[in-house]
Image (cartoon, rainbow, N blue to C red; front, top):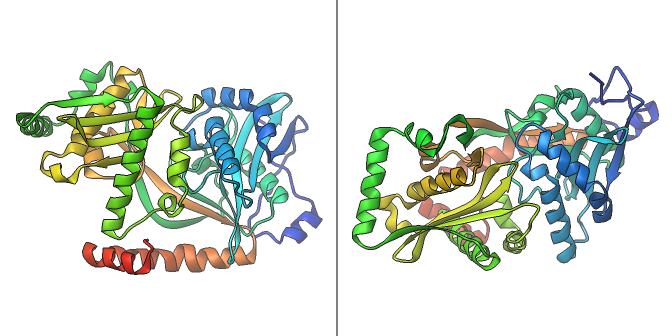
Length: 406
């Protein structure tokens, strides 16, 4: 098996003053590393990139060619002068064998390399050809990224424990934040939807039948899958609005919702052919009481945003709708549904497993190491826990007074 790493020159090590070590014991002359910083250069390898996706392991939607194209296109449309993409590729002759899409982010405290579209993405990962050593691949990709885009640290948020990136993380990485979980529905483990549905606890199935019956006593309950771009944008807009209102009431927010352009970004995805959107609604008397949309990639569904009508909480519309979502995935012949972070009771009703998810960081300079330890590992988790421990009403009031959320 070929190594994908190469020793940095002594003068490069002195100039970057790295804390992160990316040493290697071999150099493969057939491999070359290239850096992509433009949309045109991305398009030149798009075919190979998409081909690599079909045979690479792991959850790679947010490191896919389609996602990267969407981010490039959106940042161009909104005229983001600070957008600084650094996509690292490794070629074995004429064959693409690894891709790590990153962008450089500058703040007053530090300069960080993070996954491309980091504010909106849900997972960090790397795309590596099957049979390639993850440790060697990640080391070579990181070395090339650091030489092309000097920074203080590399940040990988929400890394699945079963991903190539998790297996390839350098030994001196730092874990920031508390571990989380991502519920997953492995539809390909069953012959059909009926076989999967039979694994749901009988008492749970009975409770859901009762919930649906109560709704149907007051009107018709239907499930609708959006087909047109206009219908998909409708679901996108309603779920984003509902989710934003819910977060505001709870005194919470997220990386995505802190960016005022998040809605426009999501709207831009509604009709993309390279990253199909699946948008669905559970309707009661024609009005949506629970909705969800996400992406289809490599025969898997990635749930992105969901919302529900809390006036019908007694009937658990979110749980009822998720069952229809999973059924729709099965009818579309998908292998599984990734319900993504965080773990929630209604997701656990339908999931077949929960994958551990962690935040990783790699310090590159002394400044990066200091900020990672002081803020990412110490102050931010403490402040977050303090705010989460507040009563919801007080937390919401604090958010309104500050104009911000956690």
